[in-house]
Structures are given as C-alpha cells and as structure tokens.
Length: 295
Image (cartoon, rainbow, N blue to C red; front, side, top):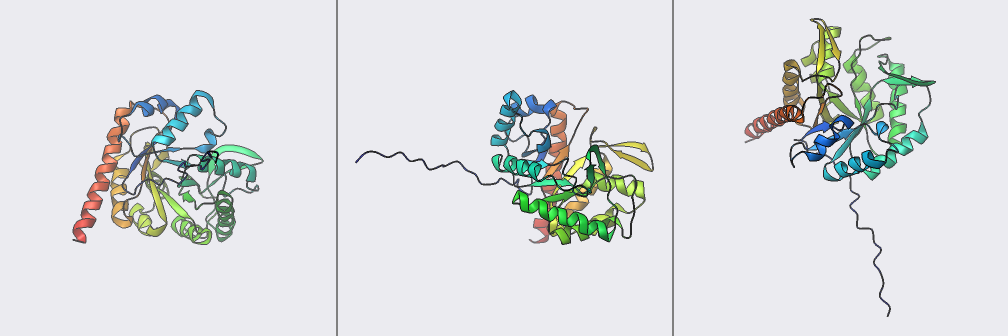
C-alpha cells in the first residue's frame, strides 16, 4: 500500500484571552523595535488598532506576526462609528473578522461614540444620552457581533459636551450594555476626566457599572488644562488620581486585564514597564485582599 501524507492542519487556532491578572502595552509602530527585543515576561499582552494594520505587509507585517505569535493580542477599534448615522461598513467588518481570526484575538473593543457619516471625521464624537440613541447604537453593536462572530466590548469615551440627554452617562452605558448584550471596556482615565469636566462623583459612577460585563480596563495619562478641565491625551504618565481609581475598580469589580495606553511622547520602554509593574502590584494586592476575605 502506498504511503499517505497526513494533511491535517495542526495549527492552534484557539483564541487567546489574557489572564485576569495581566498587564499589557499598546502595539505602536514607534515601539516595535523595543517590544520585539523586550525580555520574556516584561508585559503580558499587546493591544493594537486593527484599522491601522489591515493589509500591512513587508517588515511591519512580519513584526506584527512575530509579536502576535509570542504574546496574546487584543484589539481596540477606531473607526466602526458604532453610534453613527451611516450604515455599518460590512466589508470593513469582514476584514476585521479575518484579522481577529488570523491573530487569534478573543477581546475586541470599540468606542461608544461615532466618528463618520459621509466619510471619516477623524474624531471620536459623543453620543446623546437618550433612549433613541440607546436603541440605535445597541442594534448596531448586535449587528457588529453577528458579523464578527464574537462578543465585543464597548469603551466609555471621554467627552467635553453632551448633544442631548434624558438620562445620565452611567444609565446610558448600562442600558446599551443590556440591550446590545455586549461587554464593557472600562477606561479608568476617561472616568476621571469626565468626572472632573462634568462635575460628577467618579466613585459613585464606578459603583453603578455592572461587574459581570467588564471585560478589561484601560489606563492612560491626561493633560491638566485647569483644575476643572482635563484633556484625555494618552501622551504622558498615568496620574495618581487614576491609579487610585484603578485600585477602587479592583475592589468594586475585581481584577481584569489592564492595558496601559500611550500614543505619543513615548519614553524609553523601561519607563513604560515601571507603570506595567505598578499595574501588576495593584492586581496582586487586590487578589491578596480577596483571598484573605475568603480565607
């Protein structure tokens, strides 16, 4: 009998989700060299915006492939415009799905905002906190999840004005999560920025969010324009008030994969890893308190 060749594909296609107690960095092109040469265990996962990597080949594509094989990859979208008036771009979503499947991405998130109508506006614009907006964006999230073949998370966005409102922000977010049956990427820095700018209690806001729907956390730096005006920039180290809010989130909702966002003014990787170490220390402290409480 002639020998046969086993053509079974043994490649592991299972999705990779970062552990709850994990700390990640944004995969930015300016950091590619440093990330590729970082020591094993320096960080636990990477996050990229797939919008910026679709169709990228050559040296950059090879670098992305290498890093996604070595580290779990999460994705944070920039341009779906979940709350926008124009129909969702189905072809674009299908390309995103291929990207997520190829890189075995379990956690994909997008902003709870809008950014396009007849073309991209290159800004994340706030949604009205209204019942009509809840129904509109929830339907679009459900459609997105159907096309992507996976549950997604939406991120609470920073905003500086509200187009209209018949409910507050926390009520709006909870209503969207419930109607869309999706998860929440809780951006701790955005909670702080919005609480200062719109004069609400950040701790009370955190307490109203549903723990079971929180998939991950983001933290980042912001610019202090004035005592009563903070600008979400992602261009500087995390402020002490944000670290404190992250610790509170651990107490209220538990430890989740946490991403340190830095989009420009990049310091040496060693400085970013100091912030990664602080995330890990807060996670370990929270898990220790939980173990003692149940001991």
